[in-house]
Figure 1 (tube, rainbow, N blue to C red):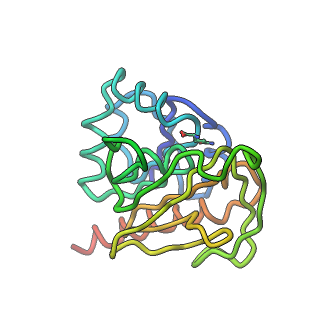
Figure 2 (cartoon, rainbow, N blue to C red):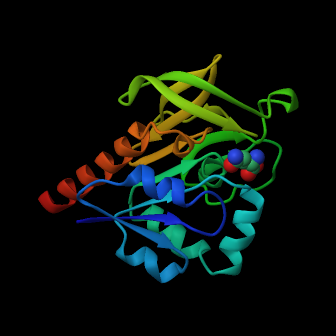
Length: 197
Ligand code: GLN
């Protein structure tokens, strides 16, 4: 079995658990930093990035999460989760965890479009991936080792850097599990590579 955690400080947890389900996957709701030790991969859900950051500090998650990322373990951040991962946040002096080489701008789709749905083509995932955007960030730019997986009206909304995945939207709020299952596959492959080393 592989162990995939969902960081359960805030936000939609149950929906991620459902989307990650697979016969070989044990899903762990992560409420304590010690639980990170048993994980092969981790999901950062959406919610409110500033609140999540406060809770990360309050519950002693900051260093353990940095360590998890430095160890090269797969991480998938959705919406606020992607903001936590960014190396740079537009207009803010400091990033949060600075895990992925990208700049994100919070709430960047504008007030009149606080939430909307779209069907997007996404590299490796599918031609028609259902995506729900809620006060979503835009990925303004990515570094040379980051691959853009999807765009919406010319704006980057999903990206991958090695075993790190980020998206602006909420794939867990639809019945379309393909993006989560793509992450599960990345986790499986990371273990095969680690075993061969
Ligand atoms: N606007 C939120 C933030 O800045 C993200 C919204 C979401 O996760 N749906 O953290």
